[in-house]
Length: 130
Image 1 (cartoon, rainbow, N blue to C red):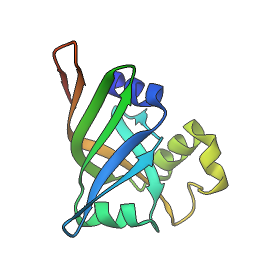
Image 2 (spheres, rainbow, N blue to C red):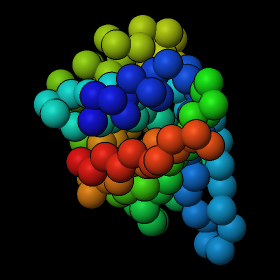
Image 3 (cartoon, one colour):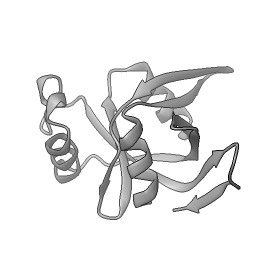
Image 4 (cartoon, helix red, strand yellow):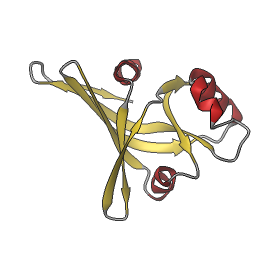
């Protein structure tokens, strides 16, 4: 899982895919933190992406850097604890201008039943499950 987080952090931006009815939706994300041995992301509860995850928590994310790419498929699970929100915001202080661990909007979610595949054109794929 640490290798997956490092890859995502090194990329700076990854793309999260969700589904809205029968329409795929993809948008850039930047948060990827390990808290209590789980890989977390952060968004706002008022955003469409959160509503899509609530309806169907199966997601996939992807990023590319230096000739390698990663795809991570799994389920996102909401963790509404203050401790998880605070950790995520402390690790990403620029988000504090929009979010607070005590507000009703901050959502932190962790990946469950996840499979990451790191690929390139020159090496065999590496599979990481967590």
